[in-house]
Picture 1 (spheres, rainbow, N blue to C red):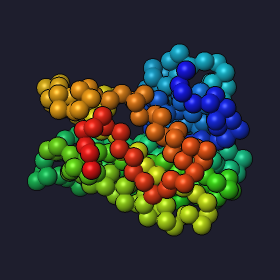
Picture 2 (cartoon, rainbow, N blue to C red):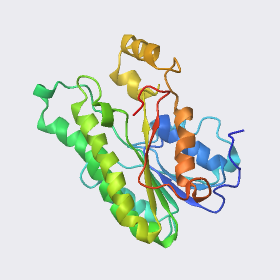
Picture 3 (tube, rainbow, N blue to C red):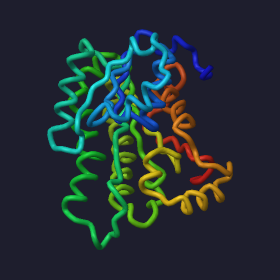
Picture 4 (cartoon, rainbow, N blue to C red):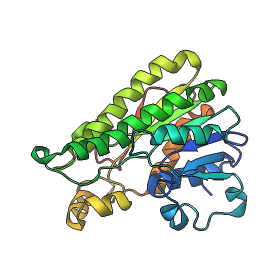
Length: 261
């Protein structure tokens, strides 16, 4: 049981990027559990999706799942993915979840290279804007679509040392979310973002030490790190016109009280 009506998104088409693992996989699984057809970008390959997204997924849910791969870290990756998505959706998208993103490693501000800058900006900013722009006609055709972006607690608090590029790119996403919400309101498209705190996924296994994670958990009011499953319901809430039809231009913090502001 997930707490949502199993038919909440029946007949709806959802697109999720970065769906192969972590938060994206949890979001995809929850949309499938609420009746949606999901076009899921699994990443550059199917490697992580096989172990995370597809593990234990009921056959009835798999029948409504379309998996695509694309490298969004290159200049043409989002355009390639957009063409693939549009080939699957029959001209209408009800919800777009822009979740794909990366830190690319912790780099001191004085040591940032052009390649590192390009990697973070191309994936976290350029691909999100490019994909959304390409899919806007299909979102407008839904006559009541929603866009849900993934920001980060780092967008507000600045992150920890070595994450300046990542934090700034997520601040872009938060501000762009609000700007897009205002611009697309006449098209009846709501735009919101989810801002996860410290969530125990492969992201932090790669970029944070266990000592740092333990110290963070100790100061969170709920006394634990979050999980991908803690985040997924926020995306479903913001995507649903039944649950959040009068909510747009908002960044929803999901962090166990780690940040209150």
